[in-house]
Image (cartoon, rainbow, N blue to C red):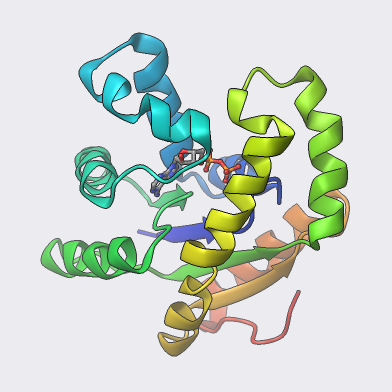
Amino acid sequence: MLNLVIFGPPGCGKGTQSARIAENFGLIHLSSGDLLRDEIDRGSELGLQVRSYVEKGLLVPDNIILRKIYKSAIRFINSSGIIFDGFPRTMVQAIMFDKFLKKKNITLNMVIFMMVERAELFKRLRGRAEDSERKDDKEKIFNVRMDVYEKETHCLKKYYIRQNKLLKVSGMYPVDDVSEKIAHAINHYRQKNEIFSDVI
Ligand code: ADP
């Protein structure tokens, strides 16, 4: 299996890159945001529980997201690998996720950290908000998501550096260039079992 995590600020392009990585390497794309939006759209019990958090740009409680991710990941335990997009997002999630992986004898191979400057994120948001159906793409909510990211998610960087798993990717380049760089880094990892330490 090749198991990856991708994280970065809202609007960094991780959804697009995850889909491409999944396609290129035959992985399952597990997006926590998509899973939650799907529950909300279906009006399920879980959807009703999480709706207000997602619409306000706040994080869904750890226990809810953990249960959902475990359930989804177990379905794909015999696949060629999974790319986790948007999960883990807090230290609690990361620690619990490690415990889960250990119990299931699964290795997390690499954590892709996408870096984009704040000014660029706002520029992209303005382009995206106009045609987006996502209520959380509105500017005020976007600010909340940015704050949440900086408070809760950014610290994961250190956690995965300590595990020697972090691949730092600049998301400031055009989409195709970013995909190419990531694909190159994954191929390098597969051949040499080594993760580039510099920003790619
Ligand atoms: P983005 O990264 O662009 O903010 P996502 O689609 O990853 O968008 O997430 C959208 C929303 O779904 C988040 O703002 C949050 O409310 C919820 N969410 C997604 N993943 C998690 C998670 N791992 N933990 C808690 N809440 C989450």
